[in-house]
Image 1: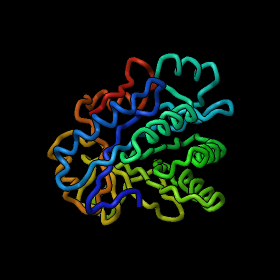
Image 2: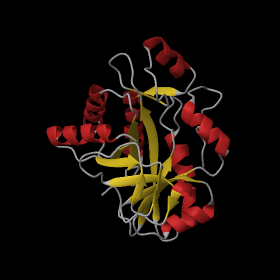
Image 3: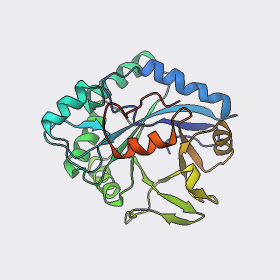
Image 4: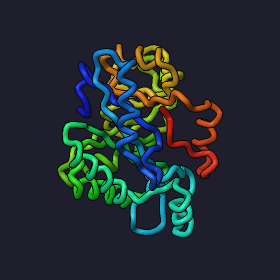
Length: 252
């Protein structure tokens, strides 16, 4: 399991890895402030990035869901600070961990619908290269989680798989599609989760301290995407359009 849910809770910083101006020290310190609302559960910072369909061999992180990122576009996104090369990000994470060996951080990577199989393969190889085991894959699409499971078996890795739901009503899951083998975790927006899932859960779109407190009181909740300062309309637009004017990195 990523964490011990009896005394730890993940606090996920959405889209944070989708940029080349990372300040991990600052991001960790901001995330740890959520401890104020998590009671006896120790906050474990988690940083999320998106794996798009892309042209070229280097794995890119950026929030582009429904079209391929061409090489020229990738260079522009990096210049604008809304994309980053995964290897550069992992180097920064490794440097932070070397300087702060007692502070755990977790990485969440989200394959999109069009993300290629070899991108997931390369991503897992890079995680192995940098010795990063505190990572998991989250996707709306079961086929991508099946790919993660395939490469876990092939590479001897144990990266957890989270299926991102649209919503739920108890055990009824509103989803895009389910992988053949049930995922390890379900991620569901807090406002669209009605009655509790009897499964390991990470809540998304947690926008109030009271929602953090409620989540921390639920033993099956592993973590929360905390977005205290984001406008709901901007969250929606961010999910549809990848542009400098809409991307937001400070979400706590």
